[in-house]
Length: 452
Ligand code: 4AD
Ligand code: MG
Image (cartoon, rainbow, N blue to C red; front, side, top):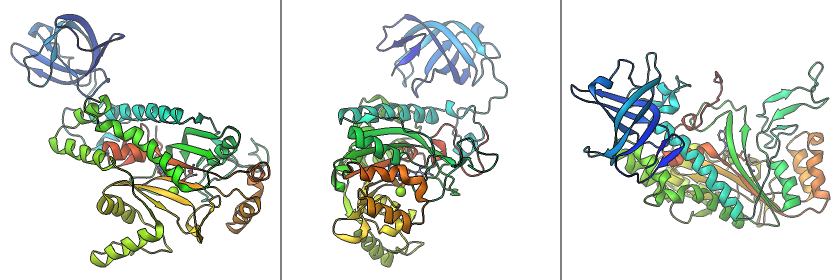
């Protein structure tokens, strides 16, 4: 592991190298003739142990304080770590005032009450580092596949999903005309704008916040979340889209299967018990396969057979749609891997999806369901015919005038195309085993909660 010191990384450092380590005290053990400070600079889950002489110990050396320790790194006699820091001088740069986080297991519900401090725990800081790792992996994945990274707007006049779950920013009404007569919203998905850009440069992707005014108080819904979205021209079926979605997910998960990978070690080091480490390894292993693909109709059949053996809380119903318990069971218990479910009934999906090639009642779409989470990605082939799209807009009762700019695309060199969007926090929750997505995003917002 790397220990970051003043602008340097020490990797395979020689014994007795003089260094300065700046960091926060994770734990303090004061003995008669010696004291141990576990210090973390935030670079990895494993801190460094500083060994202090009794005359260097002061009363302000307490858990949570920020210190700057100068000394020599030498081979440790302790079993757990290779090197320890023999302190020559210790400076407390920031004292603490009744620090609430101690070296013990804290529930996420408790940590959520500490918005300024919760990211300092090993588990939570490893989540932040893993998010950063995934952003880099996705960026590389899309670059390697010749995608143009684009920057669609977050303020928009359209409701992409047509679900009416938009946050309004300007009303377009009297006294509220910032954008003139049209109302403006925070985007629920950048897909419509990505379609425009894909019709110019072929393959585009973006990574942006998305906002949804859903009144869902669950462990997988946020009012503000991050979405990775891709849109591709010149494709008329789901297979290449699912291949790309699978590749993107694997770019984040596959490295965790490689021994010695820094992200893997960091996530494992942050877990205390062998059981927790095993649970993570099991999760990563489940995604280490070709993701199965089946239709919604087949999924409902499988679920109904299971319902006869062991009833779900809700009977799987073709018309009603998959509930979260059904999605989770399919991926976690039946396939024991992520699974693509395709061709949902058109009534269950938004206006922009194209009809399935062999079934007029379904649309050419997919959801990727992941074990323990359920839906993580939604994607589809888009309707590229002007008249059909217009009819879809009208039958769903959407405001046609707000979508004229988008409809125009179907009149000017239209081409079959499709894309998908992935809820980033749901993927992170899968990979880290942190059950509530409120605990994998730095400042979560959900219904009744936006306090900092
Ligand atoms: O399935 P959704 O609604 O699809 C779209 O928005 C498409 N326009 C995307 C596209 O094709 N470009 O949302 C995509 C994903 C979901 O599968 C889910 O993982 C996540 O976004 N998601 C949420 N994540 C957290 N909190 C919420 N409230 C979410 N709503 C959707
Ligand atoms: Mg969806």
